[in-house]
Image (tube, rainbow, N blue to C red; front, side, top):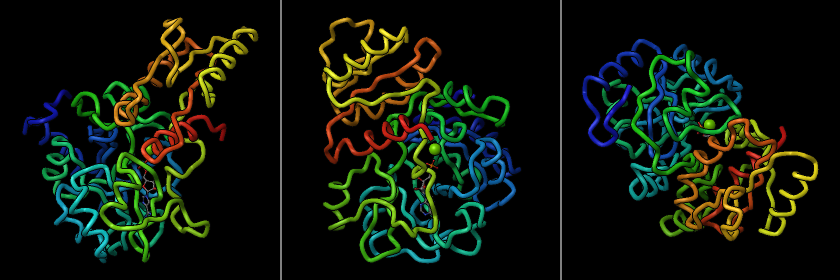
Length: 326
Ligand code: AMP
Ligand code: MG
């Protein structure tokens, strides 16, 4: 169903909310990627998400609220750091991991004692959550391990026939999944890099740590090594000349390779899909470009890695997982 991304029609939202209330699945746009939403307080409804995505039950989901005031319905505690970060970055692409309330079904948190919460900055997402009257459990609206969707057609590519409705609000502006920060410890810990970078977080709450602790209970879906992957094998290279060598090597083997260049000159334009050099623009386009290149025309997608700096961390993380074999 088409929906106005800034002023969602109330009858469209009403139909989708009714599906959520009756335990069904609705895909909807957010500012990061399209989400696959279900009533986050119903274990049966949430089980439908795992089923539709083919997602391992060990991977916890994020609960989406329409306003920060709703977190106490799902969080047993709201640490000062959570308050500080939410005040600065909500609504927006930041997920906070906090202690869970008993009312949150275990299937949402993969059995763990903490719950991940986020308030999205997209009028459709917020209207849907408000109309449904419950927090929405919503991972990305794709089959597990595949490319995330940033357009309604990407959702249908993977989930057509498995979900009740996709609300088509056009392309997602952010293009990468939210930054996930665990605020249950003394020092906030970034579990998944995203559009809110480490320097942005540190400017607000001081030092943060990065990466999962090895003994971490809740292994996050974004932590699985193979994730966000096109069906066409994706190969990462470091520099432009390596990209060209990789393409030449592929063509000697009779493989059709396409190069996603970073700072390649736009010669041989038909071979290259040059990406923007700005992290935000690159992030917004990344999945759409990979979806477009993953159409069976190529045997290999060669991507030149962006620089190893904080503002590129999320893009590098997704590309690394996209290139992983398992
Ligand atoms: P996705 O739904 O695919 O955007 O991924 C959800 C992300 O939320 C994962 O990458 C995890 O990092 C994170 N997550 C969800 N729940 C928890 C939790 N209770 N503890 C730690 N991380 C979580
Ligand atoms: Mg996902």
